[in-house]
Image 1: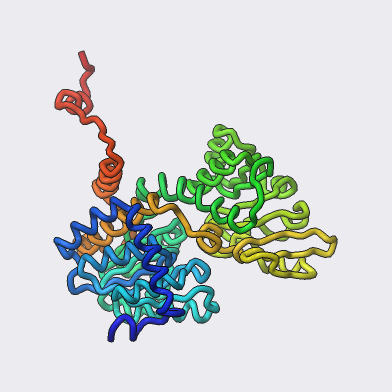
Image 2: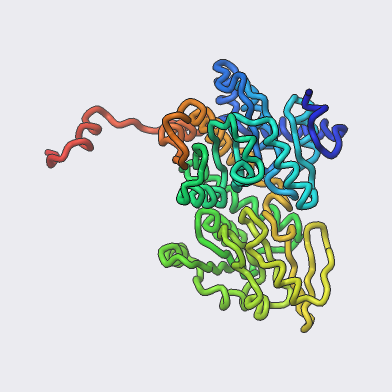
Length: 421
Protein backbone atom coordinates (compact mmCIF):
# COMPACT_ATOMS: atom_id res chain seq x y z
CA UNK A 1 0.00 0.00 0.00
CA UNK A 2 1.36 3.44 -0.92
CA UNK A 3 2.02 6.22 1.59
CA UNK A 4 -0.94 8.16 0.18
CA UNK A 5 -3.31 5.24 0.60
CA UNK A 6 -2.08 4.25 4.06
CA UNK A 7 -1.56 7.62 5.77
CA UNK A 8 -3.97 9.42 8.07
CA UNK A 9 -3.49 13.18 7.77
CA UNK A 10 -5.68 16.30 7.64
CA UNK A 11 -5.46 17.31 3.98
CA UNK A 12 -3.09 16.28 1.20
CA UNK A 13 -3.84 19.53 -0.63
CA UNK A 14 -1.74 21.39 1.98
CA UNK A 15 1.46 19.77 0.66
CA UNK A 16 2.85 22.76 -1.35
CA UNK A 17 3.22 24.93 1.75
CA UNK A 18 4.73 21.99 3.60
CA UNK A 19 7.34 21.47 0.90
CA UNK A 20 8.37 25.13 1.18
CA UNK A 21 8.82 24.78 4.94
CA UNK A 22 10.91 21.62 4.60
CA UNK A 23 13.04 23.17 1.85
CA UNK A 24 13.70 26.22 4.02
CA UNK A 25 14.70 24.09 7.01
CA UNK A 26 16.93 21.77 4.98
CA UNK A 27 18.79 24.70 3.44
CA UNK A 28 19.89 25.66 6.97
CA UNK A 29 20.92 22.15 8.07
CA UNK A 30 24.36 21.56 6.51
CA UNK A 31 25.40 18.81 8.92
CA UNK A 32 22.31 16.75 8.20
CA UNK A 33 22.79 17.40 4.48
CA UNK A 34 26.28 15.94 4.71
CA UNK A 35 24.95 12.85 6.48
CA UNK A 36 22.24 12.53 3.85
CA UNK A 37 24.93 12.36 1.15
CA UNK A 38 26.64 9.56 3.06
CA UNK A 39 23.37 7.68 3.56
CA UNK A 40 22.47 7.96 -0.13
CA UNK A 41 25.77 6.27 -1.01
CA UNK A 42 25.90 3.65 1.76
CA UNK A 43 22.17 2.83 2.22
CA UNK A 44 22.62 1.73 5.87
CA UNK A 45 18.88 1.10 6.32
CA UNK A 46 18.22 -0.71 3.06
CA UNK A 47 15.22 -3.02 3.45
CA UNK A 48 14.48 -1.85 7.02
CA UNK A 49 11.36 -0.22 8.47
CA UNK A 50 11.81 2.81 10.70
CA UNK A 51 9.04 4.33 12.83
CA UNK A 52 9.52 7.84 14.16
CA UNK A 53 7.65 9.79 16.84
CA UNK A 54 8.76 13.42 17.04
CA UNK A 55 7.23 16.90 16.98
CA UNK A 56 6.04 16.82 13.41
CA UNK A 57 7.24 20.03 11.84
CA UNK A 58 9.66 20.93 9.04
CA UNK A 59 12.98 20.05 10.70
CA UNK A 60 11.69 16.68 11.85
CA UNK A 61 10.30 16.06 8.39
CA UNK A 62 13.74 16.57 6.92
CA UNK A 63 15.24 14.05 9.37
CA UNK A 64 12.63 11.55 8.17
CA UNK A 65 13.68 12.22 4.57
CA UNK A 66 17.35 11.68 5.47
CA UNK A 67 16.52 8.32 7.05
CA UNK A 68 14.49 7.50 3.94
CA UNK A 69 17.52 8.42 1.81
CA UNK A 70 19.40 5.73 3.73
CA UNK A 71 17.10 3.12 2.25
CA UNK A 72 14.48 2.88 4.99
CA UNK A 73 10.72 2.56 4.64
CA UNK A 74 9.73 5.40 7.00
CA UNK A 75 6.57 5.83 9.04
CA UNK A 76 6.14 8.89 11.24
CA UNK A 77 3.69 10.13 13.88
CA UNK A 78 3.53 13.17 16.15
CA UNK A 79 4.81 13.25 19.73
CA UNK A 80 2.51 16.11 20.75
CA UNK A 81 -1.03 16.83 19.49
CA UNK A 82 -0.48 20.58 19.24
CA UNK A 83 2.95 20.60 17.56
CA UNK A 84 1.94 18.71 14.41
CA UNK A 85 1.83 20.88 11.28
CA UNK A 86 -0.69 19.53 8.78
CA UNK A 87 0.99 21.00 5.71
CA UNK A 88 4.30 19.32 6.61
CA UNK A 89 2.48 16.00 7.06
CA UNK A 90 0.97 16.34 3.59
CA UNK A 91 4.37 17.10 2.04
CA UNK A 92 5.90 14.00 3.61
CA UNK A 93 3.13 11.81 2.23
CA UNK A 94 3.82 13.17 -1.25
CA UNK A 95 7.47 12.23 -0.69
CA UNK A 96 6.56 8.61 0.01
CA UNK A 97 6.64 8.64 3.80
CA UNK A 98 3.67 7.16 5.66
CA UNK A 99 2.24 9.65 8.16
CA UNK A 100 -0.19 9.12 11.01
CA UNK A 101 -0.65 12.60 12.45
CA UNK A 102 -3.03 15.56 12.60
CA UNK A 103 -3.00 18.85 14.44
CA UNK A 104 -5.02 18.81 17.69
CA UNK A 105 -6.55 15.32 17.71
CA UNK A 106 -8.43 14.12 20.79
CA UNK A 107 -6.42 12.14 23.34
CA UNK A 108 -7.92 8.90 22.03
CA UNK A 109 -7.17 9.83 18.41
CA UNK A 110 -3.61 10.83 19.30
CA UNK A 111 -2.91 7.49 20.94
CA UNK A 112 -4.50 5.60 18.05
CA UNK A 113 -2.29 7.45 15.56
CA UNK A 114 0.80 6.57 17.60
CA UNK A 115 -0.26 2.93 17.64
CA UNK A 116 -0.80 2.95 13.87
CA UNK A 117 2.82 4.00 13.44
CA UNK A 118 3.91 0.68 14.97
CA UNK A 119 1.70 -1.63 12.95
CA UNK A 120 4.46 -1.99 10.34
CA UNK A 121 6.54 -3.99 12.88
CA UNK A 122 9.52 -1.59 12.71
CA UNK A 123 13.16 -2.64 12.78
CA UNK A 124 14.23 0.69 14.30
CA UNK A 125 12.55 3.60 16.08
CA UNK A 126 13.23 7.23 16.92
CA UNK A 127 11.21 8.31 19.96
CA UNK A 128 10.45 11.58 21.74
CA UNK A 129 9.29 11.31 25.33
CA UNK A 130 9.13 7.52 25.32
CA UNK A 131 5.65 7.20 23.81
CA UNK A 132 6.57 4.55 21.24
CA UNK A 133 8.69 2.64 23.75
CA UNK A 134 5.81 2.63 26.23
CA UNK A 135 3.41 1.27 23.62
CA UNK A 136 5.93 -1.38 22.56
CA UNK A 137 6.09 -2.56 26.18
CA UNK A 138 2.30 -2.50 26.71
CA UNK A 139 -0.50 -2.41 24.14
CA UNK A 140 1.70 -2.83 21.06
CA UNK A 141 4.05 -5.57 22.31
CA UNK A 142 3.28 -7.69 19.27
CA UNK A 143 4.80 -5.04 17.00
CA UNK A 144 8.25 -5.29 18.64
CA UNK A 145 8.91 -8.63 16.97
CA UNK A 146 11.53 -7.23 14.54
CA UNK A 147 12.79 -4.37 16.68
CA UNK A 148 16.57 -3.93 16.85
CA UNK A 149 16.49 -0.76 18.95
CA UNK A 150 16.26 2.97 18.63
CA UNK A 151 17.16 6.45 19.79
CA UNK A 152 15.45 8.76 22.31
CA UNK A 153 15.29 12.53 21.92
CA UNK A 154 14.32 14.03 25.29
CA UNK A 155 15.04 14.21 29.01
CA UNK A 156 11.56 12.91 29.82
CA UNK A 157 12.05 9.95 27.51
CA UNK A 158 15.41 9.07 29.08
CA UNK A 159 13.81 9.14 32.55
CA UNK A 160 11.17 6.64 31.38
CA UNK A 161 13.76 4.45 29.65
CA UNK A 162 16.02 4.29 32.67
CA UNK A 163 13.05 3.37 34.86
CA UNK A 164 12.28 0.50 32.49
CA UNK A 165 15.91 -0.59 32.48
CA UNK A 166 16.14 -0.41 36.29
CA UNK A 167 13.11 -2.67 36.60
CA UNK A 168 14.62 -5.13 34.13
CA UNK A 169 11.76 -4.58 31.69
CA UNK A 170 13.50 -2.87 28.76
CA UNK A 171 13.27 -5.21 25.78
CA UNK A 172 15.70 -3.63 23.29
CA UNK A 173 18.65 -1.18 23.18
CA UNK A 174 18.01 2.57 23.13
CA UNK A 175 20.54 5.33 22.51
CA UNK A 176 20.22 8.30 24.87
CA UNK A 177 20.59 11.04 22.28
CA UNK A 178 19.38 13.62 24.80
CA UNK A 179 22.50 13.02 26.91
CA UNK A 180 24.97 13.72 24.09
CA UNK A 181 27.08 16.88 24.34
CA UNK A 182 25.83 18.20 20.98
CA UNK A 183 22.26 17.72 22.19
CA UNK A 184 22.10 19.24 25.65
CA UNK A 185 24.75 21.93 25.25
CA UNK A 186 23.11 23.40 22.16
CA UNK A 187 19.58 22.05 21.65
CA UNK A 188 18.50 22.04 25.30
CA UNK A 189 20.22 25.30 26.16
CA UNK A 190 20.26 27.58 23.11
CA UNK A 191 17.39 25.92 21.27
CA UNK A 192 14.97 25.86 24.20
CA UNK A 193 16.04 29.30 25.38
CA UNK A 194 15.24 30.96 22.07
CA UNK A 195 12.21 28.94 21.02
CA UNK A 196 10.42 29.32 24.38
CA UNK A 197 10.38 33.07 23.98
CA UNK A 198 9.57 32.78 20.28
CA UNK A 199 6.43 30.93 21.38
CA UNK A 200 5.60 33.21 24.31
CA UNK A 201 6.14 36.43 22.39
CA UNK A 202 4.27 35.28 19.28
CA UNK A 203 1.34 34.14 21.43
CA UNK A 204 1.03 36.99 23.93
CA UNK A 205 2.46 39.96 21.98
CA UNK A 206 3.65 41.33 25.34
CA UNK A 207 7.02 42.77 26.35
CA UNK A 208 9.39 40.67 28.46
CA UNK A 209 11.66 43.54 29.56
CA UNK A 210 10.93 44.65 33.11
CA UNK A 211 8.82 41.63 33.95
CA UNK A 212 9.73 39.02 36.55
CA UNK A 213 10.19 35.64 34.86
CA UNK A 214 10.21 32.55 37.07
CA UNK A 215 12.13 29.63 35.57
CA UNK A 216 11.16 26.39 37.28
CA UNK A 217 14.13 24.04 37.00
CA UNK A 218 17.75 24.84 36.16
CA UNK A 219 18.81 21.95 34.01
CA UNK A 220 20.19 22.66 30.56
CA UNK A 221 16.79 23.77 29.28
CA UNK A 222 16.26 25.98 32.32
CA UNK A 223 19.69 27.53 31.86
CA UNK A 224 18.77 28.47 28.32
CA UNK A 225 15.39 29.93 29.28
CA UNK A 226 16.90 31.97 32.11
CA UNK A 227 19.68 33.24 29.86
CA UNK A 228 17.26 34.39 27.16
CA UNK A 229 14.86 35.95 29.68
CA UNK A 230 17.76 37.95 31.10
CA UNK A 231 18.80 38.97 27.59
CA UNK A 232 15.29 40.27 26.93
CA UNK A 233 15.50 42.47 30.03
CA UNK A 234 13.56 40.37 32.53
CA UNK A 235 14.22 40.00 36.24
CA UNK A 236 14.80 36.26 36.57
CA UNK A 237 14.01 33.99 39.52
CA UNK A 238 15.04 30.34 39.47
CA UNK A 239 13.41 27.62 41.58
CA UNK A 240 15.15 24.29 42.11
CA UNK A 241 15.19 21.09 44.17
CA UNK A 242 18.90 20.45 43.51
CA UNK A 243 21.26 22.42 45.77
CA UNK A 244 24.14 22.30 43.27
CA UNK A 245 22.02 23.64 40.43
CA UNK A 246 20.60 26.30 42.75
CA UNK A 247 24.11 27.52 43.59
CA UNK A 248 24.94 27.53 39.88
CA UNK A 249 21.87 29.68 39.17
CA UNK A 250 22.93 32.07 41.92
CA UNK A 251 26.47 32.26 40.51
CA UNK A 252 24.97 32.94 37.08
CA UNK A 253 23.34 36.05 38.54
CA UNK A 254 19.78 34.88 39.18
CA UNK A 255 17.64 35.08 42.30
CA UNK A 256 16.97 31.66 43.84
CA UNK A 257 14.04 30.84 46.11
CA UNK A 258 11.35 28.22 46.78
CA UNK A 259 8.43 28.12 44.39
CA UNK A 260 5.96 29.34 47.01
CA UNK A 261 7.94 32.57 47.37
CA UNK A 262 8.57 32.96 43.65
CA UNK A 263 4.87 32.47 42.93
CA UNK A 264 4.11 35.76 44.70
CA UNK A 265 6.52 37.70 42.49
CA UNK A 266 6.31 36.24 39.00
CA UNK A 267 4.70 37.84 35.98
CA UNK A 268 5.64 34.97 33.65
CA UNK A 269 6.36 31.36 34.60
CA UNK A 270 8.17 28.75 32.51
CA UNK A 271 8.38 25.17 33.78
CA UNK A 272 11.26 23.00 32.52
CA UNK A 273 11.57 20.13 35.01
CA UNK A 274 10.23 16.95 33.40
CA UNK A 275 8.18 16.42 36.57
CA UNK A 276 4.53 16.92 37.43
CA UNK A 277 2.69 19.52 39.53
CA UNK A 278 5.62 21.92 39.94
CA UNK A 279 3.06 24.75 39.77
CA UNK A 280 -0.06 23.76 41.69
CA UNK A 281 -2.90 24.95 43.92
CA UNK A 282 -0.83 26.41 46.76
CA UNK A 283 1.06 28.49 44.19
CA UNK A 284 -2.09 29.69 42.42
CA UNK A 285 -3.35 30.90 45.80
CA UNK A 286 -0.61 33.53 46.03
CA UNK A 287 0.01 34.47 42.39
CA UNK A 288 -0.50 37.96 41.06
CA UNK A 289 -3.42 38.87 38.85
CA UNK A 290 -2.45 38.50 35.20
CA UNK A 291 0.24 35.85 35.71
CA UNK A 292 1.20 34.04 32.50
CA UNK A 293 1.85 30.29 32.83
CA UNK A 294 3.79 28.23 30.30
CA UNK A 295 5.55 24.90 30.10
CA UNK A 296 8.60 23.76 28.12
CA UNK A 297 8.70 20.20 29.49
CA UNK A 298 7.55 17.29 27.36
CA UNK A 299 4.18 16.52 28.99
CA UNK A 300 1.36 18.87 30.01
CA UNK A 301 1.57 17.92 33.70
CA UNK A 302 4.02 20.48 35.05
CA UNK A 303 1.29 23.09 35.57
CA UNK A 304 -1.54 21.36 37.43
CA UNK A 305 -4.46 22.16 35.15
CA UNK A 306 -6.94 20.13 37.20
CA UNK A 307 -6.36 22.22 40.32
CA UNK A 308 -6.31 25.44 38.32
CA UNK A 309 -9.67 24.63 36.75
CA UNK A 310 -11.15 23.58 40.11
CA UNK A 311 -10.15 26.95 41.60
CA UNK A 312 -11.64 28.91 38.68
CA UNK A 313 -15.14 30.24 38.22
CA UNK A 314 -14.73 30.69 34.48
CA UNK A 315 -12.45 29.71 31.63
CA UNK A 316 -12.28 31.15 28.13
CA UNK A 317 -9.95 31.40 25.16
CA UNK A 318 -8.83 35.04 24.81
CA UNK A 319 -6.31 34.58 21.99
CA UNK A 320 -5.14 31.60 20.04
CA UNK A 321 -3.22 29.38 22.49
CA UNK A 322 -4.15 31.51 25.51
CA UNK A 323 -6.75 30.31 28.01
CA UNK A 324 -7.91 32.70 30.71
CA UNK A 325 -8.78 31.24 34.12
CA UNK A 326 -10.73 33.56 36.42
CA UNK A 327 -10.73 32.87 40.16
CA UNK A 328 -13.37 33.73 42.77
CA UNK A 329 -11.48 36.79 43.92
CA UNK A 330 -11.32 38.20 40.39
CA UNK A 331 -7.69 37.34 39.67
CA UNK A 332 -7.02 36.03 36.16
CA UNK A 333 -4.26 33.67 35.07
CA UNK A 334 -3.32 32.91 31.49
CA UNK A 335 -2.22 29.41 30.48
CA UNK A 336 -0.37 29.15 27.15
CA UNK A 337 -0.85 26.25 24.72
CA UNK A 338 -2.91 24.21 27.20
CA UNK A 339 0.21 23.72 29.30
CA UNK A 340 1.91 21.80 26.51
CA UNK A 341 5.31 22.63 25.07
CA UNK A 342 5.01 26.35 24.47
CA UNK A 343 7.88 26.47 21.99
CA UNK A 344 6.27 23.89 19.71
CA UNK A 345 2.56 24.07 20.48
CA UNK A 346 2.65 27.86 20.14
CA UNK A 347 5.68 28.22 17.88
CA UNK A 348 7.89 26.46 15.33
CA UNK A 349 10.27 24.87 17.82
CA UNK A 350 14.03 25.21 17.92
CA UNK A 351 15.92 27.03 15.16
CA UNK A 352 16.92 24.91 12.17
CA UNK A 353 20.66 25.40 12.78
CA UNK A 354 20.27 23.98 16.29
CA UNK A 355 18.20 20.98 15.24
CA UNK A 356 20.77 20.33 12.52
CA UNK A 357 23.14 19.00 15.17
CA UNK A 358 20.49 17.15 17.16
CA UNK A 359 19.01 15.39 14.15
CA UNK A 360 22.48 14.60 12.83
CA UNK A 361 23.03 12.80 16.14
CA UNK A 362 19.70 11.01 15.71
CA UNK A 363 20.57 9.81 12.22
CA UNK A 364 24.06 8.66 13.23
CA UNK A 365 22.76 7.02 16.43
CA UNK A 366 20.15 5.12 14.45
CA UNK A 367 22.88 3.76 12.20
CA UNK A 368 25.00 2.90 15.26
CA UNK A 369 22.25 0.94 17.00
CA UNK A 370 21.47 -0.88 13.76
CA UNK A 371 25.12 -1.89 13.44
CA UNK A 372 25.66 -2.77 17.11
CA UNK A 373 22.29 -3.89 18.52
CA UNK A 374 23.40 -7.46 19.14
CA UNK A 375 26.38 -6.42 21.25
CA UNK A 376 24.57 -3.59 23.07
CA UNK A 377 21.79 -5.72 24.53
CA UNK A 378 18.58 -4.46 26.13
CA UNK A 379 19.84 -1.35 27.86
CA UNK A 380 20.13 2.42 27.57
CA UNK A 381 23.51 3.56 26.26
CA UNK A 382 25.03 6.95 25.54
CA UNK A 383 25.91 8.24 22.10
CA UNK A 384 29.55 7.22 21.49
CA UNK A 385 31.83 10.22 21.97
CA UNK A 386 33.26 9.73 18.49
CA UNK A 387 29.83 10.38 16.94
CA UNK A 388 29.25 13.39 19.19
CA UNK A 389 32.59 14.90 18.22
CA UNK A 390 32.03 14.13 14.54
CA UNK A 391 28.82 16.14 14.55
CA UNK A 392 30.67 19.04 16.15
CA UNK A 393 33.44 18.83 13.54
CA UNK A 394 30.92 18.79 10.71
CA UNK A 395 29.28 21.84 12.27
CA UNK A 396 32.57 23.71 12.53
CA UNK A 397 33.42 22.89 8.93
CA UNK A 398 30.02 24.15 7.77
CA UNK A 399 30.77 27.43 9.56
CA UNK A 400 34.20 27.69 7.97
CA UNK A 401 36.00 27.37 11.32
CA UNK A 402 39.05 25.29 12.19
CA UNK A 403 40.57 24.22 15.50
CA UNK A 404 44.06 23.26 16.64
CA UNK A 405 45.48 19.75 16.91
CA UNK A 406 47.84 18.41 19.55
CA UNK A 407 51.40 17.71 18.48
CA UNK A 408 52.95 14.29 19.09
CA UNK A 409 54.96 15.82 21.95
CA UNK A 410 51.82 17.30 23.54
CA UNK A 411 50.01 13.98 23.32
CA UNK A 412 52.97 12.20 24.89
CA UNK A 413 53.13 14.81 27.67
CA UNK A 414 49.44 14.38 28.51
CA UNK A 415 49.82 10.60 28.53
CA UNK A 416 52.83 10.64 30.85
CA UNK A 417 52.80 10.55 34.64
CA UNK A 418 56.31 11.93 34.93
CA UNK A 419 56.91 15.60 35.64
CA UNK A 420 57.69 17.56 32.49
CA UNK A 421 60.98 19.30 31.97
